Image 1 (cartoon, helix red, strand yellow):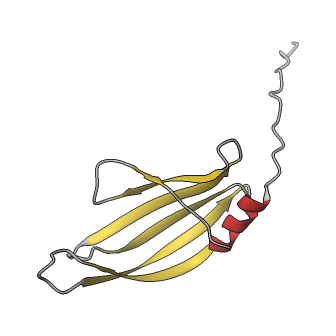
Image 2: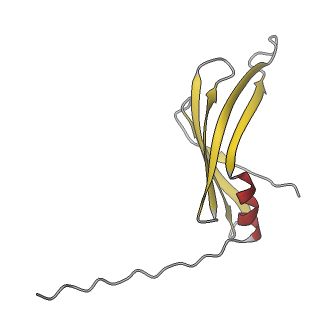
Length: 111
């Protein structure tokens, strides 16, 4: 019995640029503390949490965070960050368990 040959898809060999390499600084295990003004006549509320950030092929980083909301309650968040050479800017998304829509990330980098 003869087996059918499968046509191989062409592979894209994309080398990370210096902007992609900069994102690798974010990879690791992090803790955070944040402060938010929930009401102008109230003192700021604090929240803490952790985030685990990993690399995808040296081109993207994905972070998953868990913590507490400033007004109380647990939260889970996921962020994706990359660099788009055609747009010449960093791009990404952010979603959280406290919302029903994604946010577009606008990241600027200071040297």
